[in-house]
Image 1 (cartoon, rainbow, N blue to C red):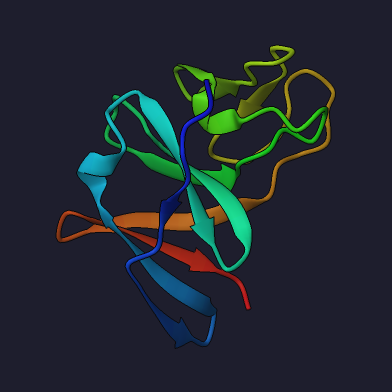
Image 2 (cartoon, rainbow, N blue to C red; image 1 turned 90 degrees about the horizontal axis):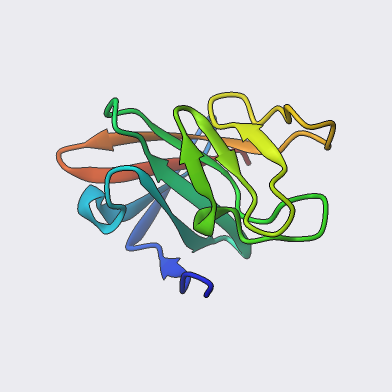
Length: 118
């Protein structure tokens, strides 16, 4: 089962890119990921048990698996289709696949704030 895409609640432009306020951090349960539709891209946001949040492209470069539906093992997400593993902080594969595109994401006043380079 694939997680439905969530949408952006507001945007603003800065010198480093476009800032998207994705809404409450509670949309992403601790230890899970959710996919968001942002500027025509699908971006997966993960909320780790440590409190860290990470954002990477939502599709696995191997066969397009929905990474937001993948299992998180510490700071690694496993693609649900073929178990390819990616470090969430860097997007680097630990199983020989191309790296994922990564995005800057933070929690401000209880909201997810994502920056997409422009």
